[in-house]
Length: 496
Image 1 (cartoon, rainbow, N blue to C red):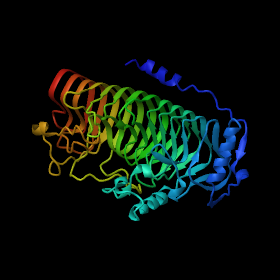
Image 2 (image 1 turned 180 degrees about the horizontal axis):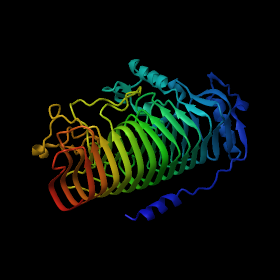
Image 3 (image 1 turned 180 degrees about the vertical axis):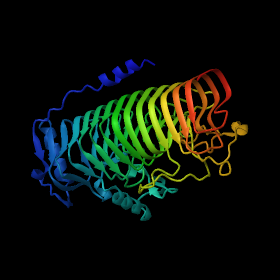
Image 4 (image 1 turned 60 degrees about the horizontal axis):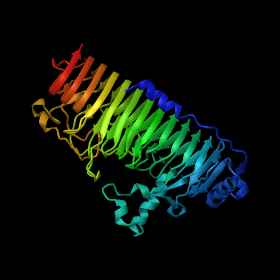
């Protein structure tokens, strides 16, 4: 993969014409009341509609607490929140409308040149709203098919997001704080030319609170932002088999997540191409600092992740090619040309998200700390992965009395081809540092893995791997003589 070409491709695509909003429309002039109790949906929508009819403008939300249901943004309109302005999402489910599959507080479908900006706050009041929706099930207003019984909550698409934009072009989201969603915080679905800069997301309100979801979008730039979410932090998804995420640049962000911090997947029907992620700080993350997944038949290729620092996380790196049951066509996609470099991760022994109100679910089986893993499935290898300048610090304390997967039973590690992808999906693994299976073309250069206390397992296990090139691996704290286990490995080159 030509990484210089990839950088140029991604950065050039982010050059966008500046928005020119010629006139302001203050929502108070349309009857909005800033008392936090009066429903202002009609007044705010009137301001939006007038700005649109006049050829575009800024809809101003001044200081105060403005309660509202769904607002539909239109072409040429910027929603601008002044300092100390709070747009409050109504807690009444009836105050929200649906675009396509989803409901939301600020919505747009098929629009262009739209923006949300300013120093104000969008507060979805998500927990109260979600609980009010939950109560509808018990009085018979939600069908059982729309309810998730194991988790005892209404399905995510019944719970409004804060921002939901579909098939829009030329979008700018800057400066604002977005908090307390009932479901995903914000979704951009099949959009083009999206700039997100200097926003703050804080949402530990309810289940499925992804910080941001980029779904099958093209030409996206996310920079200088903070994400604190009770589910995945920054998440790329592909829900449409005929589409895919393309030319995505994410940089200079901080992520705290009760799931995975940086995630490509799980939904991966079309795939992900030409993605650059760099200069990210991660902390208090329950699952993986970095998760890269193609499990629904999509093509995942040309990915660069550079300069990541993660502390207090449950897992470092998870890369998975699989085939889920819900992938009805039965196709297996591709996962290839991935570079991860300049990464330092500290994995904790205790659960890292203890301070969250909505914490990741505990696993139903005994296990020791999970290693980083790169796994394809039989007959379908992950191809051309480079790991360079990687340091991972593990707590150790792997105890074969708690859970045991010795090397003599290596063939018993389950394939789990059709299961939901997660770093814990294979159960106890025979390595504490890296577990690699069904990979063709792996370069590991300048890798340092440290273990603080003893572990009964080997440091690195490679099983069904071709074209393995190891250039300088340092294992610190493990006194076992054999750190690297090779099983069914072809064309291997190892340098000290």
